[in-house]
Length: 125
Image 1: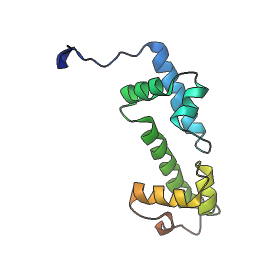
Image 2 (image 1 turned 180 degrees about the horizontal axis):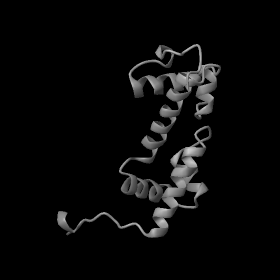
Image 3 (image 1 turned 135 degrees about the horizontal axis):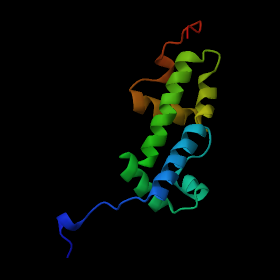
């Protein structure tokens, strides 16, 4: 029987870490497409279980949560600074096929609706 002290987190190899950095870069640059654990794992020719486990070990956050946070950050930025883009288009830009799914995810994440975010009439960036 294994004791608590003998259970260690698996060490990641340099190759594993390099792949995880590539995964993160891929996510950052592809928020508009399907970023399910399974689709990412397929893209990087690894099992979804291994990808999930390694991602959580290295980044200290579940992969799904990381994707959701990145999408919500991009959505908020676009709402605040891309005035000519509609909320429906923003939803599509971050990978939501259903506008209502985006509204619910955004509201759960931030505690308010995207339509409650003030949009300036001019870009002052």
